[in-house]
Length: 158
Image (cartoon, rainbow, N blue to C red; front, side, top):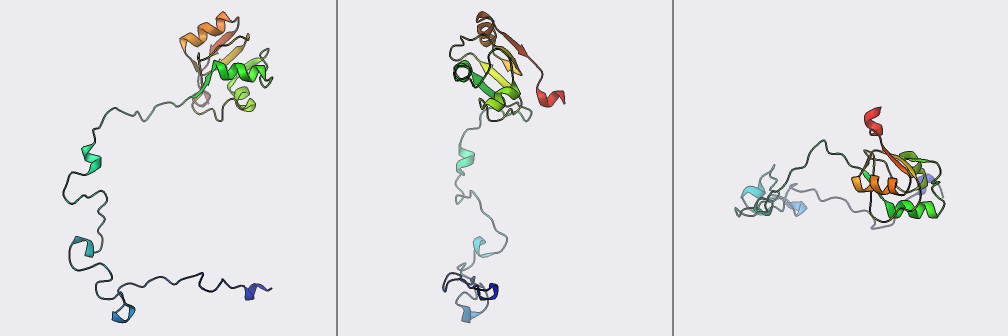
């Protein structure tokens, strides 16, 4: 086989329809658009138009507000943290930072920082350094004999 002998299978490729190229083409004159009206003209895009009826996107209620500057945190719960410590993927004796959590596979990406929440139970004594934590999480870590230090976000510090 040579490069100049390469061919597609017969019938695999089909040439495109050339619309509005005379009566012999089968799609001449009106070009398959019917007769008259807005849709027969060029430059018409009627997205979401429902024939004069109020479109669905306008009938639905608008609620709330989305801030453009909102932060998105990677959330870590106590039950996941404890599971990784029990599986020896995290060393409770050393300081656990956001980078350590990322390397261990606790979180996929840091985003705007890591936030610790108090879902589940933490039995190990740990020293955490993260961007954010709930009040109950801070209390629970200190109750277990560890410490939780809330730092500034890594991206903001740069």
